[in-house]
Length: 146
Image 1 (spheres, rainbow, N blue to C red):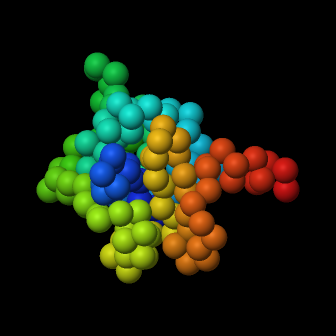
Image 2 (cartoon, rainbow, N blue to C red):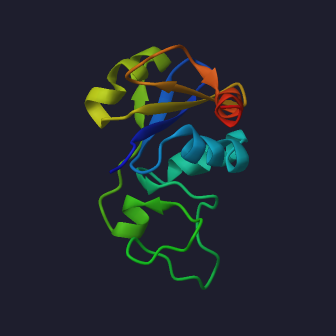
Image 3 (cartoon, helix red, strand yellow):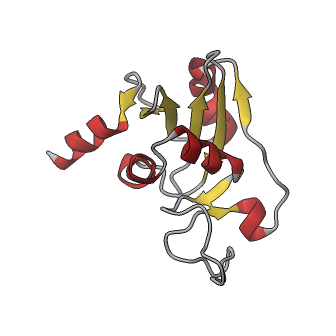
């Protein structure tokens, strides 16, 4: 079973660019990796540049000499459908704003979670029980205190 998510960046004009993530979209999975490893504009942009992802890892790419593909992934490395599985490249989806993305994420991508890099921080919202954009760090703190 997969927990799908969208990973997105809000641009200065309010438009949002998102990419699809197939596995482990939970805040304790994808959310933790995003705040720990993709917490700058540059690293978030590099992540979206991979296109659609099967799995999110702590590293964008394998080290030189490491054999990495969909069938034999290197632990901790993102698995991208285009790069690692040979599928056609799927570029980011551009939305008018975060609300439009959130309103369509479940129907278009079966996403359960949506992550938004805004003002240098990662926010998360659920698609099925919306409660407003919340900092991923706050969601993780609440989870740790349960």
